[in-house]
Amino acid sequence: MNATQEKLKVQLEQALVEAFGADFAGVDPILVSASNPKFGDYQANVALSLSKKLGKQPRAIAGAIVEKLDVSEICEPPEIAGPGFINLKLKTTYLEAQLNEIQADPRLGVPPAKTPKREIVDFSSPNIAKEMHVGHLRSTIIGDSIARILEFQGHDVLRLNHVGDWGTQFGMLIAYLREVYPDALTTANALDIGDLVSFYRKAKQRFDTDAAFQETARQEVVRLQAGAEDTLHAWKLLCEQSRREFQVIYELLDIKLTERGESFYNPLLSGVVEDLEKSGLLVENQGAKCVFLEGFTNREGEPLPLIVQKSDGGYNYATTDLASLRYRIQQDEAKRIIYVTDAGQGNHFAQFFQVARKAGWIPDDVELVHVPFGLVLGEDGKKFKTRSGDTVRLRDLLDEAVSHAHADLKSRLQKEERQETEEFINEVARVVGISAVKYADLSQNRTSNYIFSYDKMLDLKGNTAPYMLYVYARIHGISRKGDINFKELGNNAVLLQHETELALAKYLLQLDEVISSVEQDLLPNRLCEYLFELSQKFNQFYDRCSILQAEEPQRTSRLVLCDLTARTLKLGLSLLGIQVLERM
Image 1: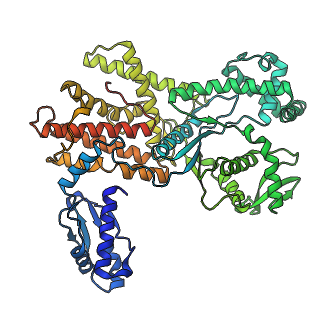
Image 2: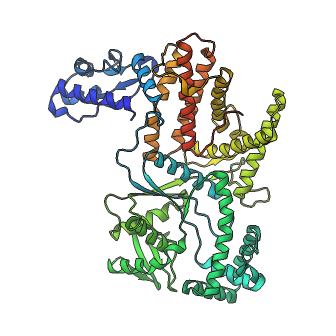
């Protein structure tokens, strides 16, 4: 709820008490945005809900509320419509005052969280010895945007990269490299990441078909867990090699993370099993130690267990996740822990969350949130793959987006007969390409699948990053053309007269509500929708209102509207991890 809505709600609550007595304190006035702008900006629907309780017609109830309602500083006189809706239209003078106030505020009127918390966002999480692929795109981009919004709101955010850097795959890979490429286990940079991935695939094939090799790989895992010097050294080299490759992607995407892999929690796993045993939750089943869950059954309808220690004494993902959860609550002191993974892992999170709750590890003031997302699909509507059917490498996808943006820009410059330096072209192509990929992902409801299309995401006319970047650059074009320094525009300069100015002004004042909603529901697409609508409202204003040629004081007022729009776009896009351009 934005500041204006909050003020109106308070006034309506007071009017209810004055009209009908103290018993109506705290009754929700059901204040919503008006469904049709011609009826006003907001409507209160409470009169309809009170009809039965008060034994009166809704219009009579609405009339009694309006009689006691004092919103004269904010709204025109309230009107009653239909069966009893109370319509409220914001005063132009109020809107002008609000815009003049936020003009000097770097946060553009968005208040920080009233009670900042320690929050953890667990996202990206690639596996060592594998390349990041299109499957890591959504977790990385969505997680980063959520972290940015929470940080902006003043929360103490720990961005964690829970990389897969432990377990059977390392025994398998080290055992294979001892045979075919021992230098990779003793010498840094002996392999590049592509070769490492290729060796990993071959090791997996051997592991799946060769019982003797399986046993050798398991012995390497035992040596790794026991801290054998040569195996541990090999493991560190493989991790460092992958880490460097991940960092190239993170720098390209402007992502900051604290790595804390599965290996970090290895010393804590036995304690998880011991504590679950003490709490009486563990059941031995076919040699494995399990916790049986409520609401989860197998195909036969029997209760489904969550295995926390395998029959061979080894641990699995669930054990590590339980250990990490306890550490994040007890050591990191997190109050909200957010996991950004694909929707297919929903059951896993529901299961280990349930075990942690049964064990009494989750205090009442700690919130656990799984943030699921759908698949990235190709234009054929199937899972996004290369032409040969392989998973698309994330590095290739990003490079291709920049390449497309480069070609689009060169074509546009040719049509416009514009000359630009190669440095300018490369920088614009980089920003537009990466921004287009991020925005195409974030603008979808994260729970849905979406179709990946370079042509659609680079379109200058649709709901895309280039469209908004173009609006931002257009505003800076106005400042260049008029030799205007936006920072030197006078305060108290906004005067709203044209209908498009009013529409733009009202929308600019909704930023706080949008950011607050994303902070709660973790749906970045709501911020995307807001920025797209804002860009459209600015373009309508730009098309119908003269700016540089207008007479004073209208000229300065319209320049302030331009500046506020540009700053809102820049702030909103930065919270999505998107950089802006003053020229395109």
